[in-house]
Each structure stands twice: as C-alpha cells, then as structure tokens.
Image (cartoon, rainbow, N blue to C red; front, side, top):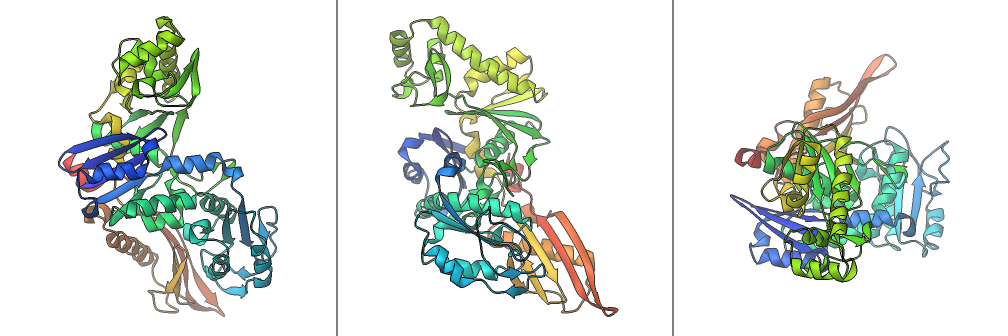
Length: 505
C-alpha cells in the first residue's frame, strides 16, 4: 500500500492505493496536519509508504521571491567577477577538486556578523561539485547565524554549470524552510516518507532537503502520470481543472513532456520538470460580472462568501455541493442566468484555445470539475475526451504509483585515486593509476545508482534499466606515461510509474 498526497492551489488530495484506490479531498485551509489525521483514521500511516507532492508551497515562495532577502556567498576562484551575484570570498578549488587556496574566513565572519537583514543564506563554490570542502567550511561558520533549514549549499546539485548552480542554490535557500516544515509534520506520522519530483519520480525526503528545487512543478507531473495510469491513454493532453488554475500537460507515449534548465523569476536554473501550461482560472475563480483570474474564497456552494465559477455551473443546472446556495447568491447579486451561461462558455472556450495549440486528438480530464467541463470542450473541438475514474484526485494517484528516480553525477579520477558522487568525495573503486575501459566505468556508475535506489526501497524491476545521460573520459599522460584516467558520468533511474502498478493497472 502507498499513500499519495498532493497539495494543490485550493485543495489537498490524497489517495490510498493498494488492490483498490481510495481518495480523499480536503480544503487547504484545514492544513496538511488535518489531512494526515484523516488518513490515519483509514490506515496505519506508520506502516505505510507516504509520498508527498508540494508544488503549492514552493510556488507561493517563488511568487514573493524578491521579498525574501537571501545572503549569497560565492567562492568562484581566480579570474571571475561574480560580485553582482553576491558576496565574493577568496578561496579556490580547481577543476580536479584540489584546494588551491583556503577560504577567507575573516571576511566571511565579518559578513555573517552583519547579516541580520537576511532571512537565509546560499553558498556556492565554482568547483564544489568536485570537492565541497570550502562550501562545508563556510556552512560551519554560517550555522552560528542561521539554522540548517535556512542554509543552502550548491554541491548536492551535482552539475558543474556554475551560473545556473548559483541561481538554483539561491532558489533553494528561499524555499528550504517550507520543505523542512512539511517534512517535520509528515515524519510525525510516517517512518517511510518520500517526496515527489517535478519530473515525475520519487526521492527520499533527505534528498529533497538538500535540493528542494527538485520538487518544482511536481503537481503537474503527478496529474500527468495519474491520468495515464487511470485512463491508459498514452498520448494527448491532460487538462487538470483545479480550484485556482487549470493546467495542461502533454503526454507522449505514456510520459509527460519534460523541459530542462527551467527559467524561474527570470533566472535560468538547473531545474528539470514537466512542461506544463496554466491559465489562471479554476472552480474557485471569482465571478464579478465576468470570470476573474483570482481566488478569494471557496464557492458559495461549499460555504464561501464570494460567487465563483462553480456557483455559475450550479446556476445552469449542475448539482455541485449545495447548489441551492449558489442559485440564491447568484439571484441576489447578478440576477441573470444568461450571465452564468456566458461565464461558463467563456471558460470552456479559453480551454479550447489552449488545447488547439497542442494539435492533439485526445484530451484527458482531471480535477473535480472535469466531468462538468471536459465533455463540452470535447464537443466544441470535436475530439475524443476521457474522464477516468478517480479523476478528481488523479494527482494524488500519480504521486502514489510512481517509482523512485535518482540521478547520479559521478567523476572518477584514477590518477588521484578518488571518486566523486553527487558532490561527495570517496576513495576510487579502481586501482590508483589504472586506465579502466569506458564500458566498465559506465557500468560502475550504473551499479552505484542501483545500490542507492535499493537502499531507499526501490523495486528490483524499477532499477534494471539505468539510462546514460552523459559520458566523457580521457587518459592522463605525463612524460609519455599513462598515469590514470578521468571520466565524468551522469546516469539516471528514469521517472515514471512503478513496475508494480504497471502490472496491476
């Protein structure tokens, strides 16, 4: 059994997936703690695997990105001017991972003693992914002024691209506290807790604490895989009608389309996630003479004070919540039933315009309003539409049925006798000075990521195939003698639906 939880813009959805699927939807105003309490009444959470998608908290932080002051400490080394990005400290780790110059501790102390204006701190060294010593040293000093949930380091990101690593580390510093808070809450209920990534895979919570940007856009990834699992439709566009927004995700051969190096608040990052499109309208969108791109409250039909799109649907004949309340409120404020028809029609046509841009022949509807809206979209466009069972919580189902997905950034340096895995330095598996074959190096990296995934509880079937993302190697020759070999490898257990559920689905 797996419990999947997705925190959306309006509601938190949960799914208990075993031989059958049981779903739960609660308004966000109750809080995640209440969702966990409700779930604990249905199953013993301490004995079950819990996976959480947290796009909403991250999106809220990103929405006020510039209001959260971050102290950025950079250790770029020689010849690079990064003063416009943050406070630059002397200290240098070279491309081989050797510490050439130690950290300028006195300047760091001076900066930290005057850091009261900042809410968090980001620390990034140019070659820290090959030796994090200076970043860790800076972290030890920063701990005297900031708690761990307010400090982000760059080396766990793995990738060498320094400008993008800086941007991603700053993003992580701003959102890390939110992820810590969610983690502490869920751990009170679960001994087996994972987060859901924005590319459609699962990671242990500890990895998310080091790099919370991995969770960016996770709700879109969840709904895409959930829709595929529930509908068995491999290609088309998933339309997820939520309370605050309506999201669109392209599916190609059973997988959502992914994008690399996502731009967030105008800055390119190392974030990899599902490619999605959103419109700012959903079931809770305010109706004030026309549909507005904002949410003030839940629908009147569910006890809210402001008329919404959901209430408009009730006025044209649907029964969602307490439809009589919707009709009374509509009559008191707007009077015209034709206006309700007009608002709903506008929403449907807005969805149609987005779908046309994708050039697909099938749409899969999810979200609590899907069964009311998607048939009209299908008829308007004259294309096939599907509304699968459990469509209202397809996102939570997607969270529950996905597999563990890990990316390993590996560097082997047999001349120095060391290996670096995701920024951490270890003794090399190969004999010092040896020149192993490329195929052997690649297989060693693949076996390492399999071992890590097993330690986190991955299914054997899910880790058989490991994808090679990047490989480069060269032999080190000095004075005409081969001294060793250096190889950079990136391998990945790809995201997707767990083999366990593919068999059962």
